[in-house]
Length: 436
Image (tube, helix red, strand yellow):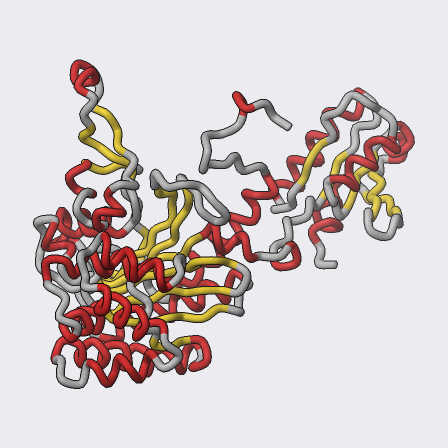
């Protein structure tokens, strides 16, 4: 066990080879899906101006922004002017505001990389974690929302997850619900932030917070929570919104999204969920979360955010997107779903006279695309080196000792069967690169 001084900061991790291979498996599978949908890659800096980020995530979200103090002569002020990016959506909005005329319309982009939040670490919750996002900017079509949801679902299938469900709601439906309950507009945002905790807290605790922190009447708070969590919540919400225009339009958004996406991802995987809120302030329309058995919280989420780019000073264009929570996805993958690539060839070094030849053999095999390693240890015992080859899960081991050099041949050992064959050096590439 490493002493505390050598451990990474709380909420962060070191990734050794096995961990990185799993992550690369996920990134590669997700990237392939996003590319097939026609999304283009984008990369933005790890940090942004603080005023770019603040005010976009709600009061609770703003508290989790990792701030960077002013530097140099301003360091003593204790003030911050920069911050590590909280998500990938606000940086995208800044890019569109800055380069809008240079981007295709609509602009479809994907991004993969780390984000940072000053959160309390827990299972599946880190302060530094990776996100894989897709977004469509410049299209108000319901097809854009459906394509984002379908791309997220296909990406999850591609990494090896199939037992997941997509929960759908609309911020417009929720706004209509608050209106139906007579919730004042000035406290509506805070009420939604509290309702977003329904998947984490007991219903009574949420109702209590609505009363104590959001100043709702106790009866209104209880009725609101009861309606959102009742077994017949969908029917209750539809009845309540019959005479509320904003609410009806929100329900229509939900129904259109499900109609378009269900044939692609499976009708059993997607459902209207009245208790889904998504606490971020910038959402304006349909919202969704993906949940999976064995993992608390969501493994992916997203929605429509039509006014965010204009809020940053850019053009007033519609936008929607989705984000995959890589850390939580990896936590659900079994060892069978992610296999490390095998080493193709392990080259032994029986004596110092064979060292130059070993390097030459390895170079040829690598140029042929074979994953090849040369033994770098001090032992010249063949048994020890064959054990090393087995530990590296090599398909073949090359043996080139005095007898082989005298015969002008190289012994090729099949590490699975133990069978050996002698091959001229100039035929190694053909022999080892042949399909098995």
